[in-house]
Image (cartoon, rainbow, N blue to C red; front, top):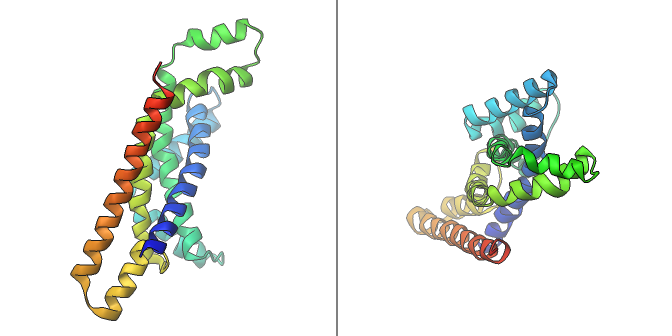
Length: 204
């Protein structure tokens, strides 16, 4: 079960990395003047936020499979969670960008920075500071969502291992209580670590 917990952590972390990169693109696209980018962002965010995460994982695993594109359970779970994360994080990041005064970007431009450089060195660091705690909550949500992997045949993550032990021993209550305790402990460790990290990074 501890090995399964490590697999769950790896999938959650990878989904956050991929989801964060896509979410930054979506958030910036929504603020652009390009109607195609705005429409694409709205479609992604609307789908991710207004349909169940379980359906999104199903569509990756079974939907693509029906088109002849076969993806293993772990990859389908990773893609599904990353898709969901990107939708939620994009709105979080858009709120963070809205909270930054426009004078920040204009001041950077006045110093000779190109728009892309000013965004990377001035605006985005401030945005990530503003949304840090909300992003921490999304990481916990991603960790808990890895339990959905059991519906697409995942057997080596925490939920999959727990289900397999349950089938072999019929000790449902005992194993699922232990699994719940592990999920709870991982979530608390992560939020506690994030709190310490924020104190270290954002003291001033």
